[in-house]
View (cartoon, rainbow, N blue to C red):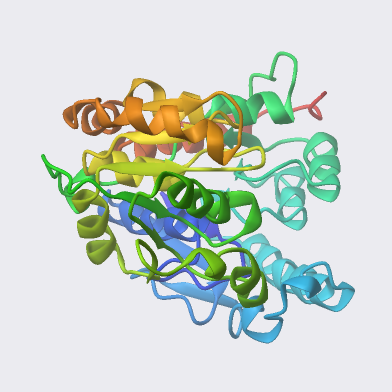
Length: 358
């Protein structure tokens, strides 16, 4: 198939990844290409994927708007709207069998109304503008990364054109490590809702060694909320590439997974589990759906509640997390799931689909 893949524009689609959605789009594009599809990525021009890139922005949006306080800026919104319109205009010229829209932007949803087969991936919360467009536009199929996320978007029965496709990874890129060194580890974007500050508080309370890995998105917040805990047995290990991160995760004994908000999936947990790492987690969002019996859960999302979960996680055999990933969250399984949705979207083109109801 000839596939147009629309990516989010705030960060480049290249390693080391700024977040889970950037990693998802990079592996999706390369995985589809490896399966014989012709993929064009619509993204910022500083992306590097290994497939043709249609640069809807010269460079990613955060390069010109680095201040987190400006992420709702009207000028930035206008730039993103114009960029997505450029993508839509190019796609409307033809040459694509299906559109995979992972942009998290409402503008591309109109493509389906023009008869273009579309699969829209809803990886984030139902932001008002995107939610309105989702419910009003006829035609596209929708995928969500978890059953929990489906219930967030459609609390009742979801329409037939809504499917769950779990994001997946290549377990071969995350080597299994049979033994840990007794330390705790945390991985992800350094943002308040991801909870690195709570992981650091937990380790400080327990006197256990902890290393935090990930991109610091808001330096001022990091310096105020996380840095005071650093020193001694708690350290920040930097923003690592995949191979280095896999080794670092595999060397530890427990991953702390500490989402504060409504976590849609939990790619950081899946990557750690692939190396054999059991998880001590807050029971937030899709965490239990993803981690299952490969981890233990705090009774409430507080540092003091995480201690019993850490003790339980230390007793989990390391082959259990690895096997769960191999069973549920592989790249090949994800690609097959999306291919099924592409075929269904193309088949839908013969008949007009009604707007979705919430």
